[in-house]
Image (cartoon, rainbow, N blue to C red; front, side, top):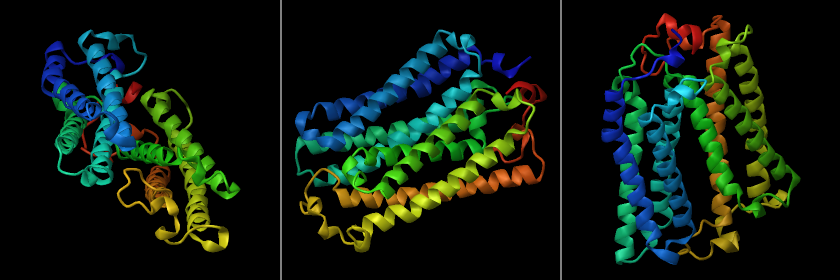
Length: 328
């Protein structure tokens, strides 16, 4: 039987809902409710964090409804791979919101009931992040699917999730178009981030859609070439972005005090120079992950691995059944 038609029992689904999904819904709901109640004092960072918590709440609610109503039988792919993928992103989103919200906003608030609400929202966001991590790590055990291959439990999948997530954070900073519209080289960097994000997202979707098991050509070679292209593109951005942002010779500002938007130390908004620095750091992080990904796929191709799902690189080293090797 194809693994896409193998699903957990109703008892397992109810167990996951009561012990994981319901606490996730409660935590994210409380987090964005506390911040929303602060009104205009929540600031731009508060709006950004609240929107992320709202998205996590809505997606968790949709997934819960699909599971409880057994609607996953209508999907042409293995539904629970999508659930694990979403849980990975939700864990990263809630963790990032907790860190950024506390560092750039909460610490500047004076002693006031609003500060207590902001701290409480951060705490519930951290709790939600932990709950999503538990879901990712324990999906097999919770659903009693030890024999089923989960794509997100492989090193390649985790790298793709991290690559696309870091790119998403970069895009959040690049929403300030004044950072790059004045220089064609910086516009090229934005194009690089977009191209690499699309390539990583396409690979992730193809794997979740079980495409590599329907094609005669080795899927590992395809992923190796795309990763190599992404590495080369990111190398160009790693050179151009800091050069044009922090070098006076190319019109950049090497020191933070040179940026007038950074004068107000009590500002709740991240100034332009800090945003440029954040993009440079995130570019280096993503380049490192793409290089690790490139080494991984070079190894897969060199040893002649054609079925990535049965490779011994699974993060938790779960066995893969012969049934799951045929379709997943």
